[in-house]
Image: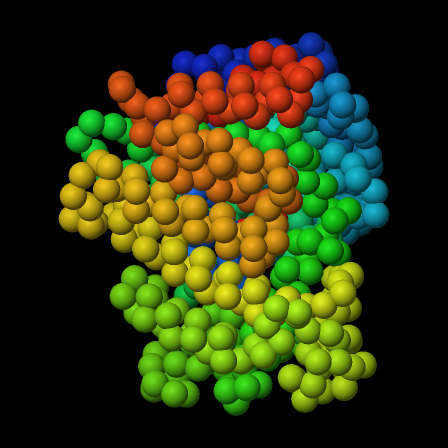
Length: 519
Ligand code: NG1
Ligand code: MG
């Protein structure tokens, strides 16, 4: 009998193909290990509709969980002290490792690219959660041994968060295996613990992927907020007169190797926006530390662009921190964007280390120690103006999109809706490309083809530098979905990758409805 690992609410329903997949994973487990699994945990991939590279600045995003996922079938072998992992994908061979007998955390070697590392990350955060909720039991006793069979349908490195899907499924499985089925883990806890999991692999990511994967809801998009507290609000797309709101996801097939490129790409962007926040704070004489309760041991606390926005408004407008409302957010963001224009005088050429240090009134050595040493980064100049402008303008676009999605009186016809939302997505792509420099030629090409063949908006989704694109397309009878797919097939896939098969094209273009999150 199939038993889900997370408390499943009444709205949850296994579709026929999901049920089939669950049974196929269970029987593959049996073939591999010769026994039945105790349970299955699962977590989906996600597509981010708008709000790119702003989650780590604590700005909200519009995302949805999609119908590709990672499933783990699990058998608990209580006192074995060993974890055995198998994967349905032959590229990921069997792995076996022993658990520390004294209850300490599993070792993770982040210097190698290794699929079991994701399992270990999920296991690490689950372990620390277990120590938190049941210290007497997990203080210095080892975790239960496990046999695990994994099967994923999220393309790896494709910007649909295969890593978050795997880590969330793993963390859930480890908690369930050690607490027993009577224990129901909350979505809030699962999101909170998994957000920091990839930090063990050297990636300084935000929390959007995990929130979307854990909290997904069938037929709903998610508005994910990170402050004042982590919250995912599900809402339905507006009911249009003639069309359905449909998102077509197309993979560039350029695999973004996030870890290898982190020092020049992902982590560097995180560092640049952190420095930008400090430069703004120095210029306007505000302290970012006042913006939140900083844990005493966090000497490295820096504050981010949202903290600056609040600190500035507190000092100059006597305003309370942004409460999350659309009106206040729009107001604050427009005002802060003007400050970005005033502050970053080395606009286009970027900041060399000494220029950035001077803007902060600190020495080059202090600057390097404070900003460049936590995660290693490599750069010629720091593009502080461009990155800050992207973040604030993207946060503003998210609010405009949310308003459109949730207040039907914002548009007068189907066409009007598609145009306004599509334009926001196109502006987001332009900003990701020109200001954040995280697009790539293949992404630009897919966006152009989609837009000239029936999509109203098209942009990269996820970290970028390759990976997937998402396009807004009128769906349903008489809609443009088939036309967009055909154009991408003929003008992108067959031209760029002449050897590509029909099956591969079919897998590269995903039209997915929003689905339920982890269970
Ligand atoms: P992807 O592309 O799914 O790995 C990454 C980050 C997100 C977010 C986006 C950009 C991880 C695990 N996730 O997503 O937190 O910052 O990039 O919006 O690195
Ligand atoms: Mg990822």
